[in-house]
Length: 79
Image (cartoon, rainbow, N blue to C red; front, top):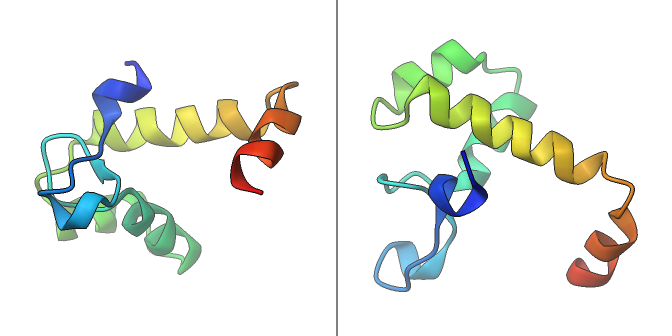
């Protein structure tokens, strides 16, 4: 699944905050829940509009981005 299929940004949806595609669930919410030791299953129960496939694909994309040899580009993008 491509990142554009996983995340949408639309200023009409939550003021343009990145959300999980097809939902109104901010991407940040998934990471906040995991950081708070909420299991993926619990997250999916709390946000039934997010599929397991979407959540796993999003985590996989984040893993690939953060372990990429091109991490310097990420530094430049968020600086």
